[in-house]
Image 1 (cartoon, rainbow over the protein chains, first blue to last red):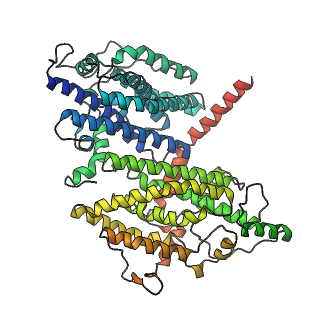
Image 2: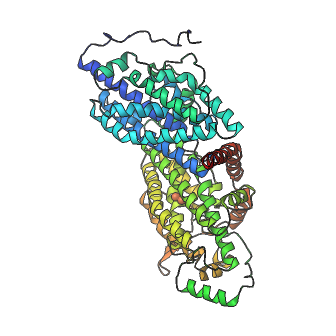
Image 3: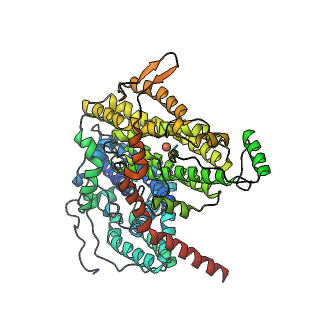
Length: 275
Length: 326
Ligand SMILES: [Fe+2]
Ligand SMILES: [Fe+2]
C-alpha cells in the first residue's frame, strides 16, 4: 500500500521559488497560514458541538462542549486575523459563514464525522496531539497574533490531547466491545494523518518566513507520543494507508459541504442581517 | 427552576418521632441549614429528592433544545456564547445530581426514573426551538423565570441544595442577559428578524408562565414546603413578579406580549394578566408536549447507545485497580 501515490498530489506551486518576496506574496502566505489554523479549529469545534446533549454522560457532555468552545475561540482569533491580513474588509464571521468548500483550508481529519464516541476520540487524539506540538512551536512565530493565540491555546490543546489520550486508553483497555470500536475509530482516521505533516509551498514559505512551523520536524515526536498512548491502550497502530491529501488546497471529502450547509444557513439565508 | 409542583394531592406526613420532628422544625424555622447526616422527616427527604432530581433532569433535558442550535448559531460569537451556556447547564445538572445523591438516591436511579417516565422535568423543554430567536427567548424568559425561582432557593433549608443554588445563580444572570441581547438584536434587525423575535415571544410566553406551576389554590404541597423552607415564595407570587419584570423588557425592545388582558393595575402595584391555559399545562405534564417524545427519545438513546462507553470506563478502572493492587 505504501507504494501507491497519495491522492491529489500537489501540482502547481512546488515549494522553493514558487513565491517571490513581494509584500503581496507575504500577505497571501500569512492569510493562507491563518486560514489553515482557523479552519482546523472551526471545523473540529463545529463537529464537537454536534455532540451536545447526546454524550455518554453529563461529564463527557461537559468536556466535549468545553473543547468545542476552546476551538471556536481559537478559530475566532485566527480568522479575524486572516481577514485583517487579507485586507479586503472580511472578518472572522465573513470567512466562517460566507466561503464555500473550495475556499476552506482545514485538513480532512477534522471534517470527519463524529461516528461513535471512540471515533470521536480517535480523531481528537490524532489532531490535538499534532495541534499541541504545532502550537508549542508557533508561540515563537514572527507573526505577533499567531504567537499570542498559540501561547494561550497551547494550554487548551494540551488538555484536549490529555483528555483524548485518557479516553483512548480507557476504551482500548476496557471491554471487548470498546476495544473493537476504538480500533475501528483509529482505523478510520489513520489515512488522514499524513496530511498533517505535508509541507506544501505555502507551509514551506510560512516556515521560511518564521510565521509557521516546520511540521516535519516534529513528526518523530508525534509518532512516539501516539505510539505510547496506543501501547498503554493495548491497541495496535493501524497499517499504513494511502494518504488522503488536498484539504489545504480546498479539495475536501463529501462531509464538509454538509457541515457548512448546516453551519452557514442563517447568515446565507439572510445576507443583510447581523446577529 | 424547573421544579414545578406536579402532584395534585397533598401527601400526608407519615408518623415520625414527635420529639425529633419538633426539633427539626425548630431548626428549620430558625433558618438553620439541614445537612445530609442530620435527622429529617421521611416526607422532607422524599419531597426534596423529587424536587432536586427534577431540577437536575431539567438542566440536562434543557440542553437539547439549545444544543439544537449550536451547530447553526449565526456568528462565531453567538456560537461560543451558546456553547458556554449549555456547558453551564451541564454543570448545573452535575451539582444538582450530587446534591440529590446526598439524600440517598444514586444518580443511576434518578436517571432511570427519568427515562422510564416516572420522574418529571420542567414542562418548558417540551416545546421546540424551531428558529434562532427561540434561543433568545429561552435565555430571556426561561432562564429569567429560573432566576426568579432559584434566587430564593439559595436560602432553602437543605444545605447541599442551597449551596448548589448559589453556584447556579452566579451563572444564570449571564444566561438571561445573553438571551435578551439576542432578542434585542433581532427586534432591531431586518423585518424577517423582527418577525422571528415576535414569533418566539408569542410561543414561549405562556409556557414560561406555566413554569411556576399551578395556581396557589391548586398547589396543595405549598404550605408544607414553605414551612420546611423548601420553597420560599408561592407559585403565584413568583409568576406575578416575573410578569412585572418581563413586560417592560418586552416594551423596551418593541415586542408585544401575547396577552390582550395584560395591563398595569395601579392599585395592586402590579400587572393584571390573562388566565394561563392549565389544560395545556397538565397535558404537557402528562408527556403530551409538542416534542416530549423527541426529548425522551434523545435522552434514552444518548444513554443506551453509549452504555458501552460507561461500561468500558468501569472495566478499565477495575483493571487498573487490580494491577495496582498486584
Ligand atoms: Fe441552569
Ligand atoms: Fe441557565
